[in-house]
Length: 287
Image (cartoon, rainbow, N blue to C red):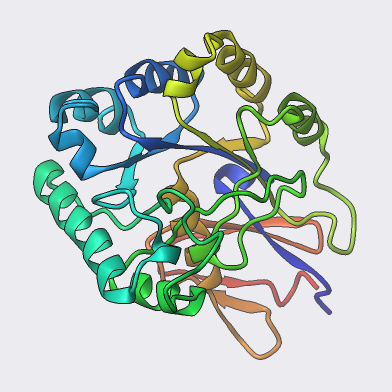
């Protein structure tokens, strides 16, 4: 009898780290270079309107320092308007216009997002979260990051359109959170082996404003180069988890089919297994 099963990240890793930074500002070049130097990955949420006004990185800089370096670009609202304040037709246009603009400019599919401004932390004008989530799903947005809920639970999101990060980089407890996360042993029985995620967000211009780029260096040094951590973009994590959730099972759970294009790692009663794309894992003789 199988008692517990948990996702494992690529390579069988039990933990993951990702970064999410907003607005596509000029300081993103230095920020992206820093992440790359430490082997970390981030998602950069761009404002088309800001880029058009020349206040952000150029198209060539975004390609060179972000996309070509293995980071992700995502939607952040064409005009940076809080979705919780917009009538659905306004929210739809703000998200769709930016997605169309960014996909045209960079020649790639863009399905990630971070809510601009106050996002979905408050609602006015007759809007509610169900309306926002509905039109984001209709617009084929796979996930959207929210804010104002810093915590050290290190959980994967239960709702990808209300993805709560772990902490802003200015959170006074962030180094304590990182120490706890790095030292956390994801082992044992019951729910203890559930996978963990550390998700850092912010704006790279804040390091200029506060003259504390050394703080970023300390964060990166503390959380990088760990054997049990997968360093990934927001979309890489979202796609992998959704692929894991797409596995098909026999009635007794001992035949598991992988219909996706990802190699999936999973922990079943403390035994590690992998399933290649299009293959079926047979564990009838294991339990």
